[in-house]
Image (cartoon, rainbow, N blue to C red):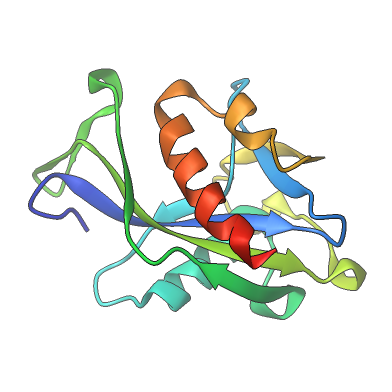
Length: 155
């Protein structure tokens, strides 16, 4: 769903472990790392989108994680023109995200990219809390910094 400013509504997911490290993922065919994220379908709640995207991108389910917190407001980032495209006839200029912090239950931790016929990621790694913004693509850095700053208060 694209709003009247051209931003696609989206959920962002930060997964952490008992050592307060974050799980980041590498996009297939690129040296691009990110947190799981995805669009919110029409008439879908934030929570439903969160757990659907979590499963589609990582194979983890609601029972594998503990909800810790979420950002209060939408955080946006603009896409470079080369990545902007039309969705249902509307130009998508960027993402508008609510970010969620989830803690993985260590006993049920198992990433499975094969649950999706077209997986987005092919690798993952744990990083210290100051690393994600160093690994993420340039146009998402500010949004990541804002989201992590707000979510870190829950740790």
